Length: 175
Image 1 (cartoon, helix red, strand yellow):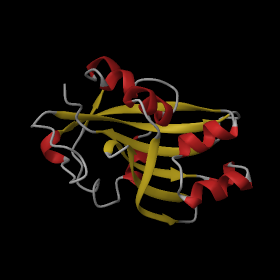
Image 2 (tube, one colour; image 1 turned 120 degrees about the horizontal axis):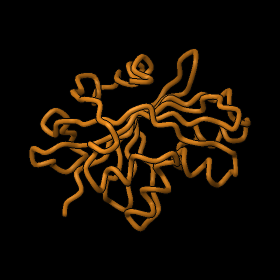
Image 3 (spheres, helix red, strand yellow; image 1 turned 45 degrees about the vertical axis):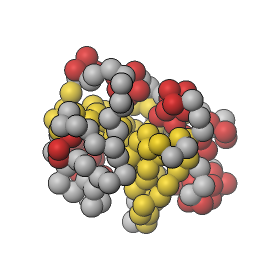
């Protein structure tokens, strides 16, 4: 699977350290998760449209290493959690003013990118199928023993420079 080496860099936080998952092809991702994950644009606007509201950012942990700024986040629409993520952001590939907005932590990365007009695109490297019993954070509703779905994604700039690498996991949607 493309990006398998880089995904290890994102599995270091407490919630993901022991994550059990299998790689899934797009047609193996159940609906509505397939529509929410299997595309080449940002998750923030996709989640905003699906849930009918503005996506807000909650940061659990953040830091820096020699290569990037990283953070563990929960995205919400109102009080509803709509995505858990771990993201590595390569600030040297952004204009300085966007770097300050990103590390300011007030808005999701997708919102900042879309508001700035910076040209970028998503390149999902793989889709995750996660047994609900193996990922049960207190900020997600119970999966009822079913599966959760996610993706390992890269955001690339117009020159294909890596802007960010992200693991994005969606909570169970109740029918």
